[in-house]
Length: 339
Image 1 (spheres, rainbow, N blue to C red):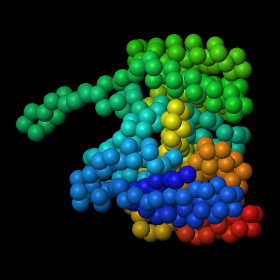
Image 2 (image 1 turned 120 degrees about the horizontal axis):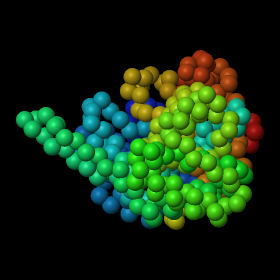
Image 3 (image 1 turned 90 degrees about the vertical axis):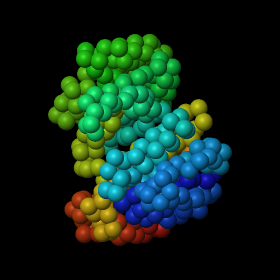
């Protein structure tokens, strides 16, 4: 299979290339036949051509590739993030990547957070009224269709059961946002009937965030709408130790196409310094390997990355003395020893 690699902006152009040798080594050692092409979609292209996703990009990806490995998007030269929305939201919607999986890896185990990825407040429905150059009215609509919620919930429940979980929590805000909130509750309760192995619970998002920080141990699987899942994932990253540790996968179950990316931003303040943490990017490759059925390769990669994160080659945010390349050099050394 072929992967489309998009380093993006800022530290994405450092951590993504640094992790690719590990993917190549694992592909060769396990006979996976994985290859990749690199695309320069990002701020530089936007500023030069006004283009985020080139014409025909979605069709080409769907036809010629099995996945996208994406770095961070964001550049101070484009303060409204127009290129980031064009690329990232274009990929999510164009490839129907409606399931976003963001595992929260903690000492007691993994909380599998699933975020709906294409609708809600990110649906792009709304507008603004401007008077004398000043925005006087701004509207963003939260839009959900029953079909989207049903297919999302059904897939996530099946995946949680397959992963051996026994508890699943729906996070919503139906007391303040009754229309979409009630839709989510109704779908969740109906779909849960087909999964007797799972015990379901429901929490308001504010209460859930409070309890997650206080004591995350009761949670196993979590389902959330787009905005709530976005917020929860960053809280989860903080509990893990920082955004530099959080990986993600965006999936279209019907086509099996998926996009894998670290959830940290482009971090322009440290871009070019060689100190960015590649942990999340490498762990995103682990999710990619898992998604396509290469569990042994994924487990080996995760073990080498985790071991490196606890040593001197780790980046400064993890208490180490290394940089981006030193971290991945150590990962490669461990892989060579264990392969």
